[in-house]
Length: 112
Image 1 (tube, helix red, strand yellow):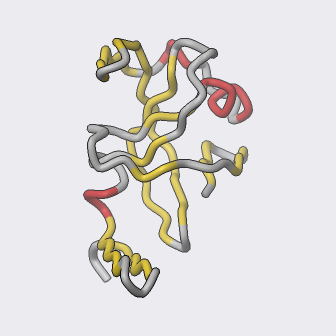
Image 2: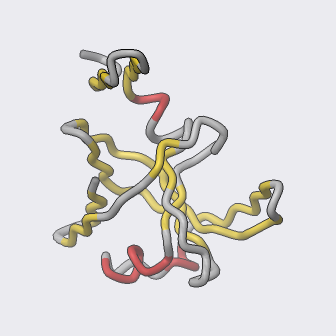
């Protein structure tokens, strides 16, 4: 998948997380996109492992042939190494189908 802000694009791996409210990405990818993380919209979130702060930025997100523009969050802490595609910003903008028995995934933009 890739993230794009202005002329800069980075490629990375992310997991689909149906339990995540938003899309969260490692700080290093914001820095590669020349984004000043703390200039974004702050958000405090928590998981069973603990809480964290992240900052939201509008950018283009593309995965598996589907591109959307969304508010995504970058972790404040550079030691958090997890990238997730969450409900708001990704899952609410695509149609996703999974047939486990056949090992098939179907994906399209929501409005297609």
